[in-house]
Image (cartoon, rainbow, N blue to C red; front, side, top):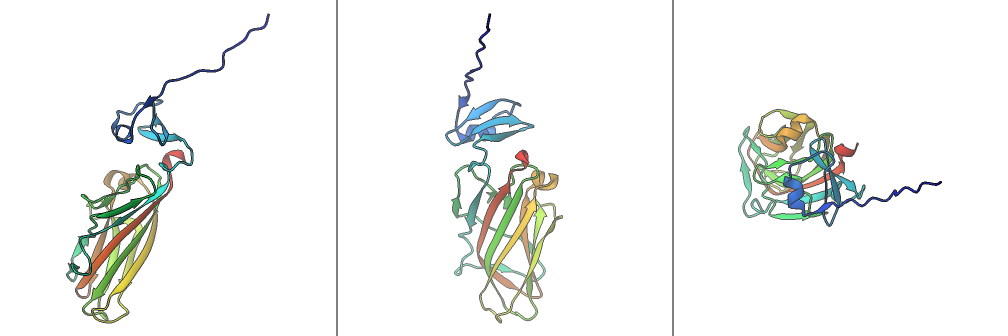
Amino acid sequence: MSTTKNTSYKVHVHHTDQSEVDNVNIENGAMLHTTDALYMGHNGSNVVVYPQAGTTQLGWARYQDTVYTSSNKLALSDGVQVALPNNSGTTIKSHSSINFYDNTTVKLTPVNLNDVYIVSLMLKASASNANQTYLEIEFQHGSSGSTVENLFSAMAFYKGNDVEQKKHEMYSFYVDANVLSLGASIHITAVGGSVNVWDIEYFIQRTQNGSLS
């Protein structure tokens, strides 16, 4: 006598919105569904299990400062390091769920341990004494003062005194435990003289989801 087995099971998954996914008490194996993705609790995070190449896993966001412009420049004094301000007054995202930067804490906000990001920094600057002045830019672990390894650069002024110069730098990094817990902030220092900075912009791309690697 043959035995027929029912191999089809229907599991009801709670349908919700992104705000609940971001704030729910995470349980391993528990699943949530939004209009964009299917999530499952795994090791303390809600990870996207479908679509596997979905927009909520990888993507980009563009954050443009609207405070420091050509008519209201950020004045940097010689030797004084500051966290580079960006109020993200104009923001464009590849998907509404993406949030890679917090304009209140001025920190980059990675999602998972071992995520990989590319950050493009754009700004305009001028120096009153171009021959002796340059800008130092570095990423720090939150507000701790410790530099994120290998994330720094320098900008010289080649166009003369008080002449606008554009800067476009790209930095790539993976998220270690310090970056995950503290975030990462971009700091800038004028060295050798005073500098004006304006039209600050971050373009942040998440190129790998560490929870799926």
